[in-house]
Length: 365
Image 1 (cartoon, one colour):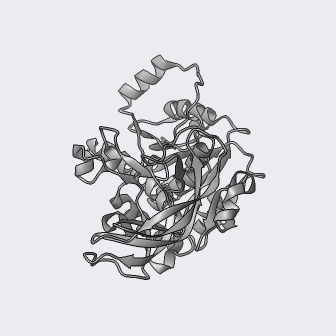
Image 2 (cartoon, one colour):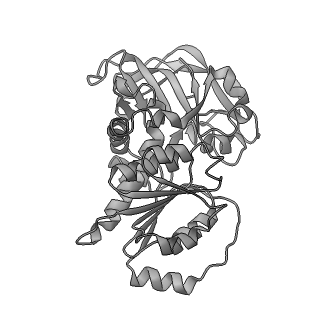
Image 3 (tube, one colour):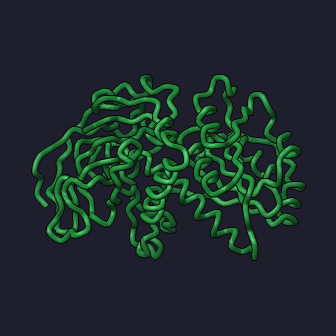
């Protein structure tokens, strides 16, 4: 493939914290099975902030810089000669992880990569989507209906919570009958709120546990709008909630706080599943009643499982569920987007300008 031109991308330099800068990167002409996508909007998430702080992330081979961004909404600009399912002008998003060739990656499930040699756009080994245009294989491009134009940049985080539910459901298939009715979600960021909406859409009573008092939290009225319950861990000890709640069938940790992992283990009910979605990092230690937890997990057939990334199937499920969210709770999903930055240049100061956001996006196109 030959380079047509260069486009600007919002990048960091490997090994240097807080090094956001604009970098010109080449845009190749799409090959026969590839698609060129003009970027409209990109999401900003906790992973991006951690990479900006140099906590992890790696550039493509031969480059000192990494263009960030793994949450994208775009429009097809050009398709390769062998692409039939997409056309110029189509609204699309793109998956993030690229497989390494191990058996699971070869089977189309790079989110279950066992060799850990995958790459991830905007995170590990490949430039991301904080740019004007990118090229990718058509198999990594997901069509998006025009009805989701306002929330399309949130398809990727929604795919992550779809994957979490897929994992939980698969684990619980061991039961002859499993009909979850009560769920707890730790964290009121975009992932936590989207997870709570998905579980609520599945018919469960959902409690969202977060740190901020309800009177100060922009997430609290959103939780109320989709029929959930918001609890501030700063005001109510989550472990005391168990006595007043029905059996907790599903718990999902989305907060990035290891204390919530410990609380989830202790709150989980009989035949329940605890899904860990966040990387807590750090070296925090917590004293736990491990004998009681062990007895409860064994006797109650409880499960704790981790979930990471998502597949094309999860992206497509996210598209379907975001449309259902709009039918059930018109306008609520878009309320998660509290900050909009105009252009890549505005992203240079995103650490300050998006402070306190539930979800921030950069409007590129």
